[in-house]
Image (cartoon, rainbow, N blue to C red; front, side, top):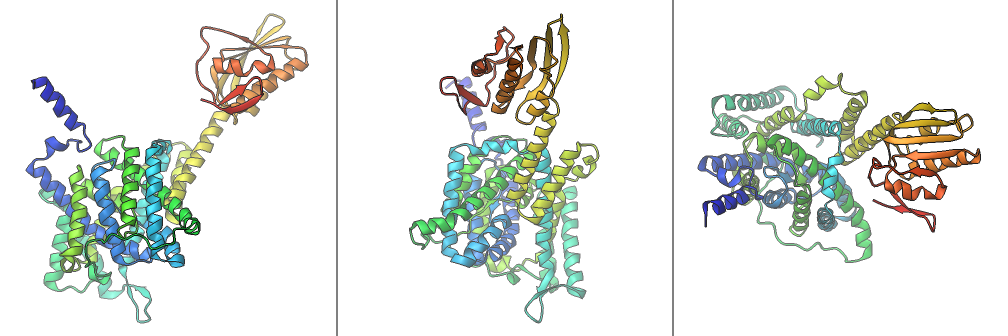
Length: 536
């Protein structure tokens, strides 16, 4: 093997799925950073998984098993190294209704079907459509999710009251909780200035937990949420009737869960990609999420998707390869199997402090500064997505943001249609169309012409325009009919060959030119049958 062959082989490894700076970066220092980042993430995953299990109305271990299995599989084969997946609140709020009405076995069946739908989305490469999400929607998603993460931590400032209902902390318990949260945040802020040997969140959790245990400070701990002690997740086929009625029950939930899971995962994929300077992997992430949820449903897990909070913890702690995500999943399993008594002593205040720092780091603060300088519609979309994310859920917020952005874009383009006119002799008038001709601009297009007052020969030049869809073709044919009824001639210049073919029916005189554009339009027209159908 020559040096050239060795170089080629090395480059292939560097471009493999295990590489950003992967294999060449797996020095002892890099391994230490990745493993410690994974440990930090695992510690933050515990209260989140337990809390989301409570939201869904299932046993805490169902949430922890999901965090382990989904986290392990997506870390190993997902579309973006360094990204963390697990049980999430966005999915839990959908599951609660299914569990309440039909029981946890139907949830497991729905999770399996959810995974199958996500696998289908990956096979069909539907992940590429995430590129249609505009940047203002991304900013609104990030800001809304940061607010949701913040609000989720507020429940840790509640305790059980005498009547069994949760009430807000007061007095010394509140002071102690706030003080420890502030201490955690201060340690996270100061640690990078002193050393990079240990991830700042891990150092903060360790130091605050030590202070609480040594001084016996009476504050809520992980054990106050639930016991996390358990066994390996057992293989379990969902106990549901294999009938169409079961499918009718679980399919709507599975479809919603699959959509929410993929949207949140792909948006997180893009966000992590901006930080790590990586691109692509959307379809691969769909496949990984689908496989992970399919497996999770057969091992008693509640399903999951990418977690922006834990992903940010991982990335900010130095996690850049698949090792950090795999380590996080394995540490979480170790907590369940052998270290539950130790992990349950960690004060919730330390974990709340970590998540508060995640909120600060996740929120796009620059979006507040640019609100006054960006187009008003972009600002409206950003704020709208933020509010809808907080008030409802991520999937609805993104869909609303994309629809509003698309309508705004269509309106802006609809108002761009215009024409410059020239009179050529006594009997000819030239219209030079500018702007796209599509369903939103056909009314403005019609208003540009005056068949009654125009001369006998009218020439329309589309060099600076583009015929986009079937509505545009119909508008041109309608205009040709108006001139024809008055006995006048209409010539169309600089149309694509497709337009030439499709507009023959109206009998216009179209002038061929070497400068005619070549682009596909939205429909095909069958001259013999007069039927319009989907085209290129």
